[in-house]
Length: 185
Image (tube, rainbow, N blue to C red):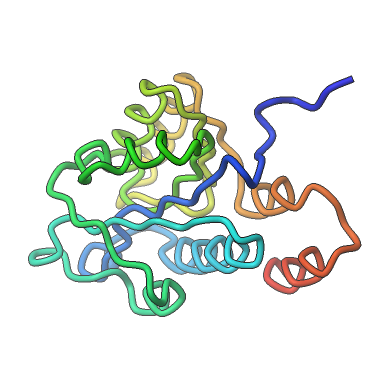
């Protein structure tokens, strides 16, 4: 018997946080949920020793990453970009390939612009994408819903923050499990 290859494997996975910047975040629906769940993902990935990357779209105009998220990112440097898709963010996709990361968890804003274009480009380049629906947002609900459907139809795994963290844990009864349980409660 075998496990489904779509189940996240911590040795193949990274977290990519896309453009959760202060100036645009204020007009997003459910912004508190996005912030809270992004922080849960960051802290869970830290506990599990899984790499985290984050981008900022034109920070001169849109500002820096939201303060509480940036605080959790500590010494990680933002990858600056001008393109909507992270495909245009330096050599990010090449780095993922070089380091054998094949499962990319993507969260951030806006669902129907930067997230959708990034997800579609990741899929086109052979990556599995897991998208926590509770850690992405758009200004308008319809844009959010249509983008989730489109990404799902194109092969993205639409899921939730908690599902991602428990998939990466794989088992209970460990110290990592106890630490992540504190995060999701």
